[in-house]
Length: 448
View 1: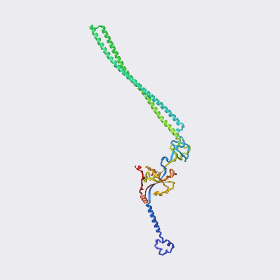
View 2 (view 1 turned 90 degrees about the vertical axis):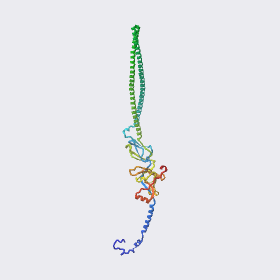
View 3 (view 1 turned 30 degrees about the horizontal axis):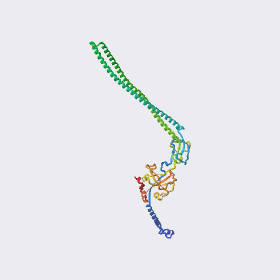
View 4 (view 1 turned 120 degrees about the vertical axis):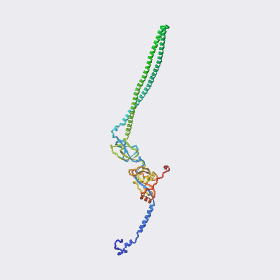
């Protein structure tokens, strides 16, 4: 008994003759418990020295490796109204197949012959441009003709001025000759008069010399008039040269002004032609946008604007298409503390939602239902979830991924690091030390 009371009963009551006490009193169960604990300790010690693969786990989803292979929303580049659907949800469409016909909702594009009328305006503007070009060519020819005529007129006036100067020079020489003749006639007359007074010459000789003197004086005066006339001709020729320059300057200025005006109008017309060409091309392309077509082969997932006559804005989602051909990948997320342990080309194990699997993170050999993957991309910027995104592709040396996988299904990833004993992993986890990791081996070419 426990001997709690101060009055012990074992001295007064005899319990040896009780059968139940005889059956259990002498059994030593603690010996079996000790054996069990010893065996359990040995097994636990052996387990502590078993190899354990350090790992990093993450959760993500199935996606595609190429952006163009992911589900995409189909929008319309212009606002419109639903007129006719040519598909339904679940249909398979090929690239270029017509999905939807829409109609315009803006009054600026209600005209069914808008492109034709714009094309007529464009043709008229092109003809106008040709007319301006012809006018520019004609004015250019007129300008060249005036310049040639001006050069000839200037040359003619210059020649006339030169002739006038030469005539002045000739008249000046003749005036000097007339002056010399007059002086000689005057001397001869004076000599004859003196001789006449002495009786050596007759009166007739005096009269002859006087007549010659008068004739010489008349020639001198006439030559003076002729010289003045030649000098006046020089002034007239120079005045004519100035008049020609002024006259043709006005003509050339007017032609140049008309030429520049024609060029300016032609350039403005060219701008309008460019605008009309742009408008015509936009209207033509806008007409094609009234038919919404499939950008690639795929399946129609969901239609957002189902009603006939329902309006929508430009850029608004109309339906979603999943590409028929795609390369599966896994998009997973790891913690920032584990990001330095992930490298390109590192092998990872993946468990997909909906596929039975028995996973032992540290014992890859006894895991079941996981598939191999390789790290192909690392994101350098942290995501809104506070983790880094890592892209995984199927490992070609491992089992192929299930064909029934669909984009968007969940996945759990296990990045395998170094092999260490279990006791070391427990000690590391308790002390919060980082795991031992390694970098995947690369080829010599890549290392260079």
